[in-house]
Image 1 (spheres, rainbow, N blue to C red):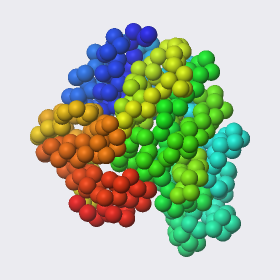
Image 2 (spheres, one colour):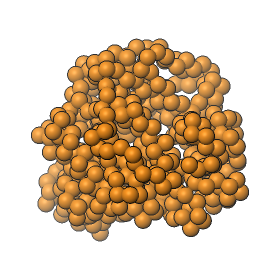
Image 3 (tube, one colour):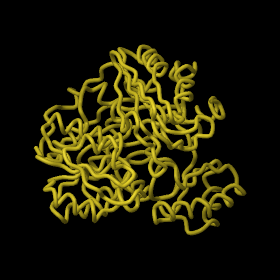
Length: 448
């Protein structure tokens, strides 16, 4: 096992990785910006170093400075967490060139799957079902109109690079497409440095199902069941659970095997996620692959008993997966909700100082956080401050535990989305397990 790794991230995920490293006896190097000098992840690291100014571009995206700190401290590997540099092929390539292990897949695989167009081509070649659409960048808005006419409205206009819903929009007629094209292209270019756009047929009110995979360097690739991620706001996940209440056992196995097929076809190694859209007839289509750890990975850990961060480190260290597919357990039901520092009415970020923080406790309750009392939530970074994960013997038990945990969760000093999460947990559609991607817009939009 590595003796020391650098964690090229901040907040909740940096703290999460550090806890696993501590249990494995691996020393950790943290990094911090001006705004994060007193952050929780800095306190938890064995050693921590200033990486730059408060803005993300001058700190947590500063590849040269991060590599410099890794070499200076003798870190053998870098864990990128999620977001930031986690899916940056250039950063992974720099690590490879410097002889530093990047805890994730090879840089070429990141580059291939980081392009929605290239990943679509790869999946088509591997025989994985994809959403009807084109596999090349649109030349201009006139081609976009022609393609949309061919597939029929509604269609999804998408940026080829990036994620998080940026540069993505559902359009339902030609006038809306013409209006949306230039704005989304500019937004994609501003955020990702790539304004390439393409079109897919829009699947109405699907379930968003993702399959967790693990792959070592010895040809062993396994699926660790699925996560239901259909409750979203502006294409960002808010609630995730495992297993999905929508899938039957036959479809669950079929989708898992397809995810393994997809990962093997590109020579994937380490932890990754294949995301699918599933319609009401149980037809499923490849959406994208995340070549990193997911925010919602704890629900998979809860039902399988596996520490995914530990296995990321072990695989990156050259170890072989010691268990077979049939040995991957599926025990109980787990649900995760994301706690954001945001106004529950407008969903705008709500920076400030956390004056009081009371986490729920009890059997089957797990808290993941990057803040504590008196922590300052700054306007410079993603406003997610914590995750609440519950596990029950079955879904009904998990929902009851979620409701009870949310009722006792307290955050004062900043506004949070806790009121919305309580509304979700109490909603009969959620309780019945019938949520699709339109749930928030249909039932909760504008409700505090």
